[in-house]
Image 1 (spheres, helix red, strand yellow):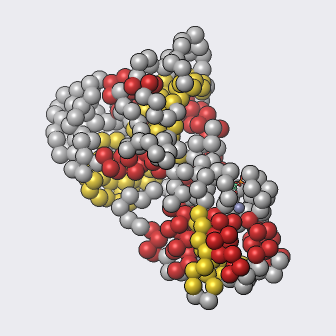
Image 2 (cartoon, rainbow, N blue to C red):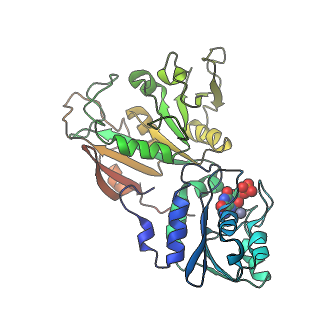
Image 3 (cartoon, rainbow, N blue to C red):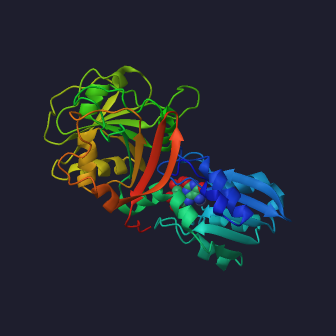
Length: 367
Ligand code: AOF
Ligand code: ZN
């Protein structure tokens, strides 16, 4: 997810640009389904709009067709993802488009989901004019979290780390520090609400005792699954266990502490310690988590770094100085030049009082 720029501005087709923008409204709400946007245009007028809002509910195309009503006949439809051709939780959108009598369909990217794909061929067979975007990059980028989950069975890993001016993640090891992360709260809320789950390591959970919620809470605000990752037992007496603000999962390595108890309402799952973080991510993938925000302390960051599991790194740069005795971000994982070698900054901006940079792996993801 880009934080400071709007990729839709680079889309030439007005219909596709609008479809992209509509899709964004579903970001963070639709797991394990993709967020998709759709526009129906007839005689140069938008006559219908729709986006996917929740798994199990109508797909974007069906909502846009319903919005267009009779005007859909003979129209040009723009949709960010290839219409589905399968009976899943809902009937095939390709059939709905055919039944509505649309004349033309422009599609952002093919559907990589093996069960649902093939909608374009079905539309063509019905005599509808179908075209794919000449540049699928904006749509592929928009659905990167979901395609990672479809292809690899694990969520997209977005890691957030706050650093002092001298590049330290805190002042004193093992103590909650205020030198970093004082600003940037708004960005943190955006990151949490765009992610299906927010994960911390057991040590950060104990030291910081964070709530990990999207605030303000209440109303229709969706809360991400909050995950505490532990190589042994689940910590006790955390605020997030008792605040009643959404689901909590303790994810601990198998073979450890089967006998410990957790507060009511807290779920427990085990991952294989032999599989490490990958195993933990697959457990989340099996629960339909397509994106996870890791609010990492130094040891969890180092573990994700070592395993080469960071898809997106968000660095908060605060103005305070932590000093020589402060802990290092990378614990025994190579030299400082590593970040530059493996990742590149793709965005920078200011949030509150912090500067923020966004990094992606240099080796491009295969979609
Ligand atoms: C969506 N929303 O707007 C589109 C989707 O289980 P189902 O029936 O909801 O089908 C989910 C699949 O449908 C999904 O994996 C994707 O391949 C396809 N298209 N899905 O949830 C949409 N257009
Ligand atoms: Zn569909």
